[in-house]
Structure formats: structure tokens, C-alpha cells
Image (cartoon, one colour):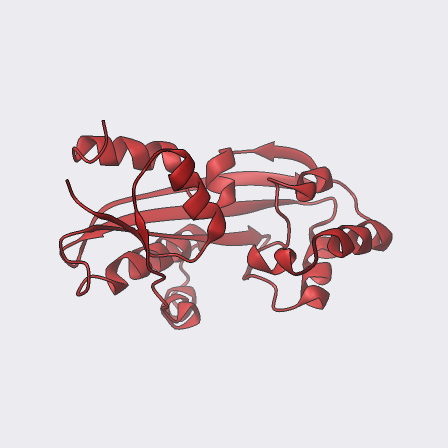
Length: 197
């Protein structure tokens, strides 16, 4: 049976795989994400294209060390209007992101890719449409005071698996993809490869 490696330090992605009963090893890819996305953005690439390129780059980054394994890479890109966002650098930026998203709908593109023998053998991207309820600065400050630095671990500074769900008015999309890993199509791929029953 092929070894599975998750090329991500994301606790959420690891938890999703673990809860699905998948045996895997964690080895963060450590790529320069801005360097990967810059030429795609400069060429007019869409946010979903950038999310996929990042997922593929992470999966391929471990190829030499894990040539016999199935390496899973994943990434997300948030887009609102014509803007594309990254994770907030600090709580001030997290506050700014949440206030900008207040009362608006944005798209969260969640991509996953699997590499084997230095080649991408499978890829998938899902898009969720997410609408935050109108938020006052006081609501945002209370939320950030409650979750603290955890806000910096996700683009948009929200975590729907916890208190962040209270910030939303509507969510259209797969829960697991929003958390960072479209697990249902990934499990179907792994079953097709004979890695899972």
C-alpha cells in the first residue's frame, strides 16, 4: 500500500484526514507561495488557478524525498470583487479583513493535488460562496479577542469550525473544502488507487 504524505502544516487539514481514517505522515512543503503565485497573477490567472498552482507546487515539492508516496498538497485563495487575499499577517490585518468582508459575499477556492514520482496524478478544486453578516468594529474586536492568534491561520481571519461561524449569514459550499481540504473527492481518488477500501 502506498504511503500518504500531507505536504502541509495545517492542523485543520491533518484533522480532516485523521478523522476520515486515513493513515498519513505530515511533512510541510515549505514553498515560497508568493513566488509561485506571482507569475500566474501577472498573466491574469484566476484565483482558482492560483489555488491549484499552490496545491500542485506543495505536492511536487516533496517528490525527491517521497518518490514512492502519494503526496497531498492543498491551498486556498479568497477572492472578493477583483481582490485576492492571503492570510492576515497580524491581528490588525485580521481586523481589517473582517471589516472589509462585513455584509459582503466572497469566494473561497480550495484546491487539492496529489503527486507521485514527481508528477501530479490528480487535482481538484472547489469554490464556496460565503456571506458575512454586517459586522460592527465592536463585534470584530470581541471575536478577535476571543480567538486571538488563531485568526492568523486562515485567510479571511475566520474559522467556521469554531466561534467564527457566528460571523456568517450564508454559506454555499462544502464544509470540508472551506476548512481547507475537499475530502470527499480526495477519498474517492484514494479508493480508486487502492489505497483505501
